[in-house]
Length: 372
Image 1 (cartoon, rainbow, N blue to C red):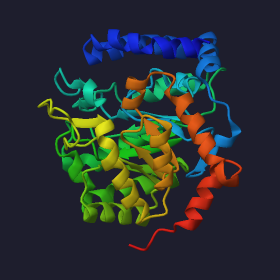
Image 2 (cartoon, helix red, strand yellow; image 1 turned 90 degrees about the vertical axis):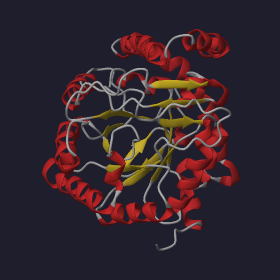
Image 3 (tube, rainbow, N blue to C red; image 1 turned 45 degrees about the horizontal axis):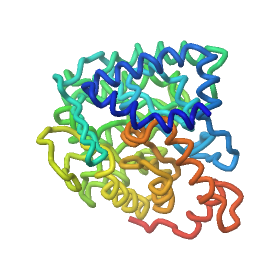
Image 4 (cartoon, rainbow, N blue to C red; image 1 turned 45 degrees about the vertical axis):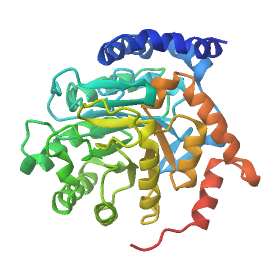
């Protein structure tokens, strides 16, 4: 009943929130989410309204078991303020961050811009966060609570803006070391368009060095899946090179893809620099996902423009094992995971398949990637 009422009211709630500057709306919502994350009664109420408990949706990826394949993308919960709440909203995982070794304020405001006509957002946040140590401390405390749920938590790490590019690998290493004990998996973000020079780390030499360093940390800190997040703006050649390096250095999966600097699909360009997310990114993100699947058997996490079950199913058919939402959750509201996963469960068990894992195994058996 709560979920139905909220779904019915969300258009009004959204209108109220959209009258606020985006970061102010975000701060107010996260004040409530942070409260809920610290109170088991609130978490139980949210889970009863929005939680998804369907064994058909369980899926395994990079050595972890997820209760369902839907994740919250990085950027929403940068500092892990609401880490305990995402499973209650129906997510099978949440990717916290992006977090950097040093705390930093990010780019000057305003730096986030809604495009309601296009169901999109442009942001140039610039990795504003309280630092890896603060996130690790908060996440460790949350994990120690008796009401912590079992959904895997990822931590997305990036480069501190004040650190020179030639020192980036050491900077990533420090952030990884800090987040390693509290994360179920880690994601290397070298693809944000909002930190100067960051995307140059996708080039062969620096990327190889970073991936090798992350691989070496496993021997010292214990096994953790490490994923690489790529940009949707890479050329075919650059994407192929990044995938080859990821495979060579033992990366466990790819997140495809980050926000785009392109402006295709907009009814009106807002004239603001930054990464574009939301519905206009969907076609490009899907194309990059297909290109990645054609070149690798690594698990793929699909992100970019997903706002319905139809969108998610298209990513599974294109080769994804997990999917993520961010902008779609803002525009569609808290009922999105439940609706999306209902459609995915129907798709997963069509044609005689027992569950999502079985459907994905059948897909992969029928479409082996070519060498490349």
